[in-house]
Image 1 (tube, rainbow, N blue to C red):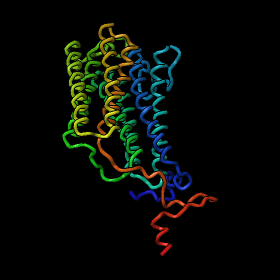
Image 2: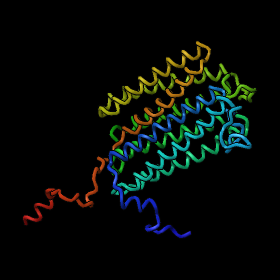
Image 3: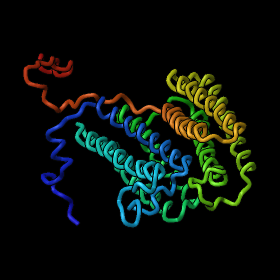
Length: 337
């Protein structure tokens, strides 16, 4: 199929009429991160309120109605409300794509990340539908959460790329320190995956009716989850001493301290929920904490390389009318000759 001519491309037409600032693109990227966290938390609220089957089918809410009926009660409203948040998420991701495309100079890496978010949202919507149609199969529920985590990952990458330049990546620390940071990312990712298994074996299945659970011992899986928490803490401490030893810049060390705060808060929440009988509100806070820990782990790892300063303005754009800019030093010297 032939490519769409630029004259018919709506993104190209918008780019000709609207020039967002670099700060606007960064804020749009940050908004996608915030929305990805909200989707994780509200998805947990659906499960914890036993509203996973509040809408009995998909894509409609009932076989005869697109929206919940009065007979479905609060559970139908909660499940349908979570579905509607997908449209809000799509709007935020769409704004980021449009802003990244309209920004001059054009940065294809940003638009690719934006489209990656869009397709992750679409795929997760389908997984959510399969979750309902399979009666909250715990394996599908786990994949639903992991797809949301993948979306959060790409959103964080987009936010980072929106605030840096396009030079070749340059390491700010020695290679062993970078490898240790990637090991921390891998361990945290494994911790997240094991957390979904804990969810699949635990008592909060997502609906008041009997729902199939993963046939594993819940307490043993929980203990494995705790063991990986200690691994993540140990790797974080090791990375802290390593960054101090190699005299890393202040920014990654500060982010690592912020990560320590997230892990500490998450640990407290985890023990509270375990010893208080798994109250729903505390589990919801634990899901929020898991998203924040993942964000900061990624930020720590990404802060250990540099891609140069962000070009705030397009040098090829004409200055607004009524303004007079001094020529750059090189141009001035050329004129003087």
